[in-house]
Image (cartoon, rainbow, N blue to C red):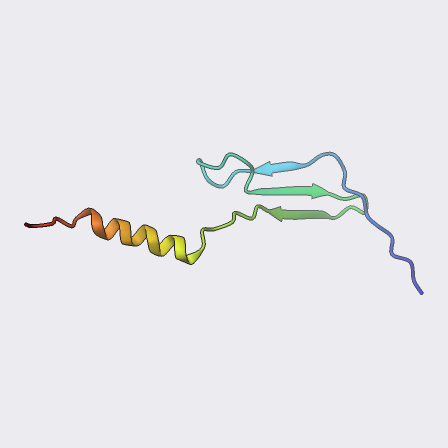
Length: 68
């Protein structure tokens, strides 16, 4: 059975902001002890489809006027 050798990240991480509204880097590049550079992308959790449907319903109601 072969033993897996773990590669350690080196401390010189570089962050890249792709959007002016991003608070945290959208991409980081991490050099590894074996000489490779690994790229990580931020994962932003999106609203559930039900939430998006509710928002759209509210937007549809904004132009609604009730006549008596």
